[in-house]
Structures are given as C-alpha cells and as structure tokens.
Length: 244
Image (cartoon, rainbow, N blue to C red):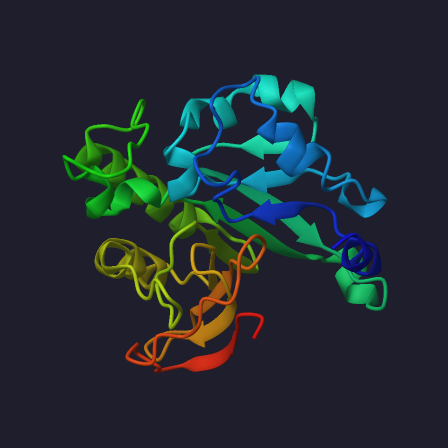
C-alpha cells in the first residue's frame, strides 16, 4: 500500500469502515488504535490525512471513541465522523488547461450502519452503540436530507458518495435492501457519479443500468476469500476479485 501510495502521490486515504475488528474500540485508550492503525500504516506516502466512516463492526464497540478528537491528537492523520463532505481540486501537470481550470471532486461520507434494520433487533447476538443515533428513523431521514442538499448544491466535476455498506454487490453480503430503497434514489436523482463502499470483502465494480452511477466495493483490506453469491443480481457487473 505504501508503494502504491508513493507511485500515485496520494494526497489522502479513505477508509470505508470496519476500521477495527472484530468489535471496534473499547475507548480512546484502546491499544488497538495503535496496533491496527498507527503502527501498521507507517510508509512515508501514507502520512497523509485519513478520512474514515464507521462500519457495523465499529458500532459493536465504543463508536464515540472513534469519533473523538482525542484520537486525532494521538495520530494527526485520523479523521472519523459520522457524515461529512470534502471538496478537492484535481490538477494535471500534463494539461495546461487543467492547471488553470482544475476539475473538482466532492466527497460525501454517509453513516450507513443505522440504515440496516437487522442491527436494531432486540434481542440481538451483537450489541451496537447507538448513542447519538437513536431513534433510527429520525437519524436516517436527517442524513438523507443533508446528503440530498449537498449533492443538489454541489458544482463539483465529480460527486462521489462513500459509505460502509453496499448498495449493489455480488459478494457474500449482496445488495443492502435499505440502501436500495432509501439511498439509491437520492444518488440517482442528484446525479452522483460514484458510490464507494466496503463491507463485502472483495474488490468489485458494478455500473448502474438506469443512470451513470458506478458502484465500487473496496472491502478487501482485512479479509478476503469470501466468494461470489452466484444467485445475486449480476446486471452491470464489470469486475469482481476476492483474492482467489
């Protein structure tokens, strides 16, 4: 990863969630933060800002710990919030026009775990940290409204939305029904160019058949070899790789 970061001269790194397996962090003093982040990503090219969303495994621990500014003081690279947006210019040294009129990309980070109803079931074999989130319906509605407003007002060349859970996937987890129902219409109506997620432990690219939206899964950072769901909707599948 460090070598690729150097070759591409990355300016920042995105984490699509499930940042600390299996059950997130226990608190801001949990050594897992150093053992799974600070002491792992030591390459010079990776000493850049990291922008992270929470995954379902992160919610199994102390979710507020990952959001705490204390972690940013422990490692200045760490930036994790529930939902936020960033805008960046894209320069090309090979194009005079791009140097003076750079393209722009706006990244919209969405907290997808609260969308998924099965995590809210009681009793549940896993415990989720819903502090600052419950009640579900109001939180999800607020996120969708904020995302729609952001996408609608954005004048960026590229609008990319990032969340943990899949919208479309042919991997082990498959499509996320709640995101198909609630998030996908917002993405397509407001002309998002790409949705990037983790959750399924593979790399895949699916193109929408009803819009220009592209679905990218980057979920092989910790686990792989989960295989493809042969019964999944294969429409628009461009690429799938899980390490096998």
